[in-house]
Length: 150
Image (tube, rainbow, N blue to C red):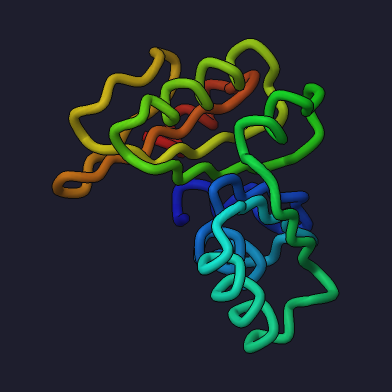
């Protein structure tokens, strides 16, 4: 989250494959204006809604029970400032999210969590944390932004 911190103040954020909502809720705590959470699993939705309520974040959150890939496919360019995706590992979904974003950059910044060994498209900055990796893509990176994200 510290990598995207400079872009969170007042941001419109999308949290795909939201699970418990940890990424989107952290973005809210760091100044994002609004987060759209997309999750389809009933158990995860219960936890997500409970977490939003516990943090009194309902006025700044919208929960959509839907398939994240289908929601993403319907997005237009620049609908969000920051988007996060934490898809299930081993299904090729991290690469699919990144490929779609490269074709239709629906957010200025996209952060995709994936298994460290998974291949994702070039063009992002990847940081590894044990067996997990996060690849950050940024539309129209300026040289100063590249240095900030490195």
